[in-house]
Image 1 (cartoon, rainbow, N blue to C red):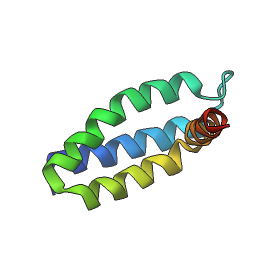
Image 2: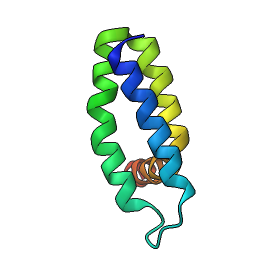
Image 3: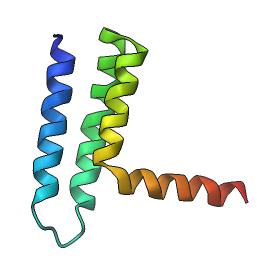
Length: 81
């Protein structure tokens, strides 16, 4: 297993632990940090392991950070109108 996959799994574990704790801002501050760390990590996974593995990691990350993804889709739909 490559180092990028190990770090991606650690990222997913940390994201899930963060989600378990209560937060006054509904975890948005944590989501920004996780996204900022996750995007370069996702690129690294893609470069080391290929597109399909990176897609699986992306889907796993989107399941953890589902509200930012929902708001992004709503924003894109709003631009299309």
